[in-house]
Structure formats: structure tokens, C-alpha cells
Length: 394
Image (cartoon, rainbow, N blue to C red; front, top):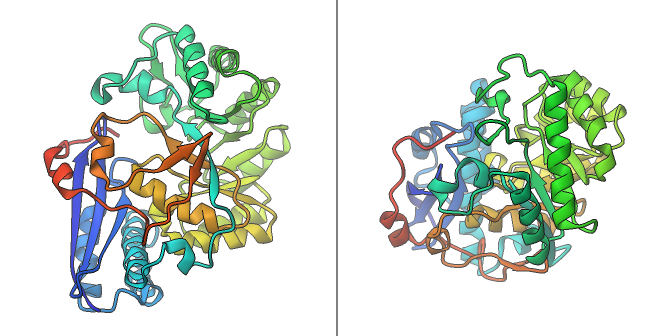
């Protein structure tokens, strides 16, 4: 079996695009993966196209060899966009090998530790606040809407939700100065009114969802160390499962962790084992967030094994489409130190049409797929019916 072609496909997903890689072989076996150019990944398609000649004509089943070659070629500029391209290729190669064997990817990686994977409703209210019109989903405009959304989560059977920072003063919006949106950049200071708004939002979610639904908060890069700690301490009365924090300093994150009773999750923007080890050495996090479309599922499991040495649990970063959800389900099924899996629940109306099989969610758990490879593929006709936006939102 030899690799005969690589092709990137893109589909409109509302405020962003969905991005897919298709690797074909001379024996007709096709492998798919999902990546993303809207979240810090502008240019991944171009890098994939430049790396394609390196693996053309080679046996796709030797994925460790091919990934090692690709990494060596990009060693002087590793991480970032290069690693996201390599991760996309690795994941499509895993799909090919499992499909050629007629088994799910998780069987190839040691077999499942669990067959039901607890998931949490991610970006709960965030897309409804920011992009309801583009995504054709119900808007969130007030704290009363947040209460109702909490009720919707609980009634849908989900046992956990994750949210971001909402501001309802003037025009309702997300607080995201860490990404240079709105007020607060580049200082990233946390003032009293921001803390009050966050606490009001948590109170509204708790009122709607009840005491049995776990709440998680993602602060992203939107504060500095002082502000992260201030926010975490203010949120302690709301019994959070974790607060998610992104920072380039393992020492700063460890300082925050020592200063709050809330569990700290981090790592969604880190690459390879080398990127995570300084954080583990500093005892900076309780849960390591691993982006498997960026790192590749095989590398993601190596990161999970490293985390296990430090008694750290892992959780996949998964704000993508159904294919990435299936990829992360295989990862979550195999990793012994799994905590909980992220999943988006608000999508454009045509989202399901893009995939041959959609994830099965029962009582807040994803049922492990049993089909070969990732258990789903891309419906290319549906992708063509929804061409990508020329400039997707960031």
C-alpha cells in the first residue's frame, strides 16, 4: 500500500470553517482527519501541501516512521503551524492503518479502557452570545437567558458544562482581550466589575442547571497571573470542576494552583511531550488539556502517559466538528488517566450532513463507535454544498 494523494477540504461552519485532510492510497483505502485554521492555525493547509511530497509513495501504515521524518524536516521551526500540519497527517495515517485492518483505531492502540466517555457541553452560551446569527442558533442576551440555558443542559442529560466570560453591559459580548478582541488589551487586567460579572454568570448557570451539573470555566489567555488568581478565588463558592487557564509560564501557573482550591486545567496550546514536561515538573496543573488534532492522537497518548507519571489526569481539547470528536473519543477510550471530554453542542444546521456517522450521546456520555478507523468519514458532496468562507472568524 502506498500514499497516492493528499487533499484538504473546507466547509462553512458559521463563524468559522471546518477543515479536513483526506489521504488516499493506491489500494483505495482512504484516511481522514480534522484540523482547524480558525484557532491559531492560519496556514496549516499550505504546510500540509508543502509536506505532502515527503510522504507521497510511502507506506501509510508506518505512521511512526513518517511522522518522525516530518518532524525532523521541520525541527528548526517545530511546534505551531508545522506541528498542526504534522498532527493532521498523523491522524489520517492512523485512520488508514486501522481501516486497512478492519478495526477501530482504539483497538490498534491497545483496546478501550472504557466504552462510555463522559462529555461536557463546551462553549455553553459562548457561541449563542457571539455568533448566533451566523450559526442560526438561539441567542443569549441576558442573565435570564443563561438560567434557561442551564436548564437546557440539565434536561438534555449532560452532567457538565463549560463556559467563558460573558459581559452584558452595553452590547452583550464575550470578554476576550487575550485574543485582542474588545477592551482590555494588551494589559489583561481584572477589575472588580469583571469579577462581579463572572460571579453573576456562574450564579445564573447554577440556578438553571442545578447543583448536580458540574460547571467548568475557561479563562483562556484573558488575564495575567494576578488576575487569574483573583478570578479563581472569587469563583471558589460555585463549586467548579475546574478553571482552565492558558499561560506561557509553568511557574506562574503553579503559583496560581497553590493559591486556589479550584482544580487547574491547562495545556490546550502546548505541543508534544517536550512542551508539557516543564508544566508537569512545576506541578502546575491538575488536568492536562491535550489538543489531538494539533499533536496527533499517537503523540497525544504519549503526552497522556507522561502526565500519568506525574499523577495528572488528561482531557482532550475538542471544539471542532464530529470527526475530531470521534478522533478524541478513541483517544479518551485508551488513556487510563482520562478525566472528561469536551464537546461542542451548538452547530450550524447542516453540520451533521458533513459526516457519514455522527457521535452517539446518551445521558451525557459518548458511546464509543465500533466502525473501522475513526468510525466516521467526510461526506464530500455535503462539503461541496457548503463552501468555506473566504475569511473565517477568529
